Length: 212
Image 1: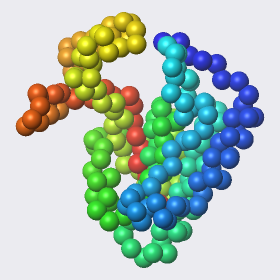
Image 2 (image 1 turned 120 degrees about the horizontal axis):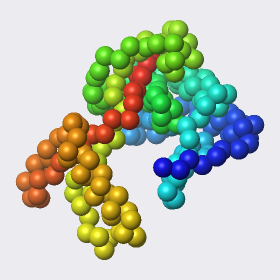
Image 3 (image 1 turned 90 degrees about the vertical axis):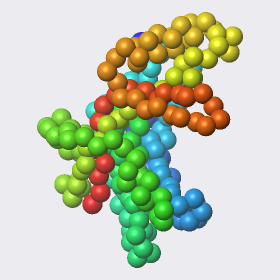
């Protein structure tokens, strides 16, 4: 896998700050309608989907710290608004480690609270000196979860003619073989009107779920 070089740190930091300012105010209207709201790291180039065989490296140094500080600012601002309602709510930061660009602030109300509380697979990771959580306030209490990517067997077995190029087909078949032969968590999906399918869960790292 090739990694793209990211240049212009000052511009990237400015974009991070613009993202924070844009999402500081909680969208009450959307929250009321859909019962949930979130802010991912909507900052280029990390929110782009690569269309080439290359990968954008995760933010480091100042950019990483700016993102973490921004997530906390958004969390604090949303918490003020949610506290005013005096109703139960879910509000937490999800810190992905090492995939920091996937991190987000998530809130929910009503029946969506239980959904988010049970969303991730629980594990017992211990924080250490290099944990991303060290960059945030000591007021946070953290739970550790597994960062997993889901792959459906049926999607990795698409007919070759449905791919734009044959290399993508070969890549999916190779990945499926790896998942079938490896010791990965999987779930059997039994649909009454369709063929049975399998979801494979490929571990990418940790998720620190925190709240004050």
